[in-house]
Length: 404
Image (cartoon, rainbow, N blue to C red; front, side):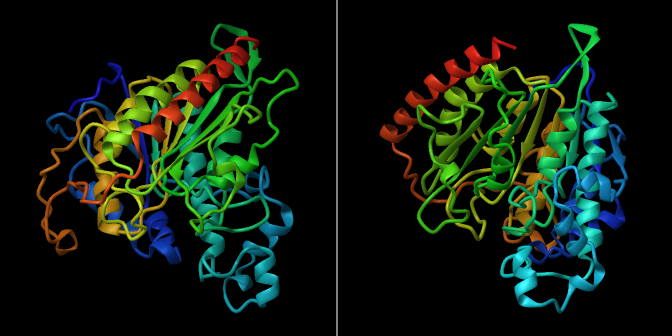
């Protein structure tokens, strides 16, 4: 499967030894970053040495840690002063920690201040590559922390790098139709993580203008069920009174390539055509892949409807795109996925039967993450309902965008 990319595509990949070491401290994903970048490097997708199929040039760029001022464009000062204080990285008062979400799934850990600055800085470094025209595709697999709130950590996420990226991309820029004028670019945020992107969605509630238009569109495709994190009223299917620029598409247990392909062709593509974004931020959480400990979807890496196919479809839109990481708690499978998605960004998907010799990749010792045997509970009746709802949403978006 070869995806059609524009003739001149430059890819930026954000990585450094320091970033990998700091990101690998994350309690929920210890050492994952080291495994991800190591596999991508060993498979040659970070090199410009001639390799069959890899058409796009790639630049590996060191991240610049975020400044306090950059973090404060979204996060509250109370939260930043607490989380960036090294003494709060361990042994904090339970009540005080709870106030800022530093408990349960977000415990404090040594190096937390550096982690916050580096993850936000890595994503913002990628944003600058896009805004300043050095790349059409920028990759930051250590980013994608979509649960973090303005004043609290949540869901393994300590910094809202997705929100910071969107805010940066929406800053005034020359209008491509009239360079003498400035306008806010339209940014489409698309989230593929199995968990709803509550932190991003809540950050942009009530962001539509008085005319009902918006330069931002949020669309999360995720699993939803009683007791499944996060519990949010925003994670349900939209209604007639919903904001058409804050969209959710919950899928049931066992979501497969076939289900994802159907909603992609009949919903995602239509939303994009109606909104016409200037930038796309694509959160590529891989916890929906078969074999992840989350164990609620049955998504594959390859094939029509697989995550690789979805990323390839987005890149064919020929819009400057930021690719972010996200969930994924089987670290070898996350490394497989991100190496494969990087090769897609470069226009030459690695063969899914590419051999991997390290014992981490037993028992298959191949790149592929194939679907398992879980039954897909997303019935035709349910998907018909989804499509019917979204046909109306698409027309609403198109009509509102025509006003701006």
